[in-house]
Length: 277
Image (cartoon, rainbow, N blue to C red):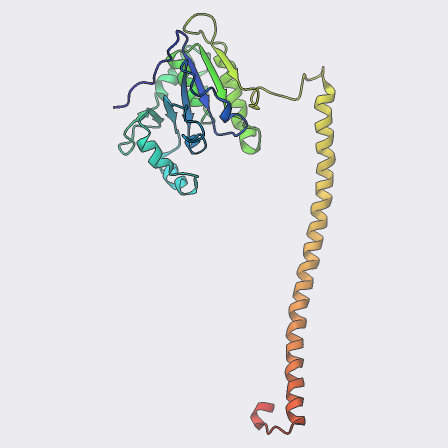
């Protein structure tokens, strides 16, 4: 039976959520006894005992499907399944799995009830979990905290930027409106090196900060189209040249055989008539 997460030594309950992004995952206040430290997925592969001997984890989250965890395991830096089985701390998962001794079923139904009852969500918005990060934030609010500190979370590129980042920032804004255990509102601290809650400047007031990257992107996009078009043309020419090279090599080999044949005739080699046909 998994134990409940360790409560921080100080009167304030402070939870530090750490993700995989290299920009700030090493900057978390490891060793600070006033925090509970919550990790996610295979973060343990890069926050190691050798590099951060002071790091102690109070809870872990892997909210992926059980089959996905196994299928994804061979491509990871370390044996993630083995770590989950031997970590000795509560691991929040979709359900408690027998092969993960400290796995804990994430209280999704309870959290979703709080979303509608206490946090201002409409019933149809209870699926507002679009990344791994959303689950520990929601659980921290459900359990009651004073502060949430965020490290190693960026969601600045690709599909993460498209749909996961707005969701993560939505949970951060929601958390800042919730009552803290000690009174007032929950304080959410996002590392300066995290991309979350950051932007190029004040829209409208700092038009230059917005306009420059957009103009540069459009310019580079046009240049990229030209370069890629040139690449495709050169690739076609290369393929054509390679085909002609193969044909020429075959033709040269055939002519070479005839030259050798003539050499044999000059030297008086008696050839089998069938060989000349």
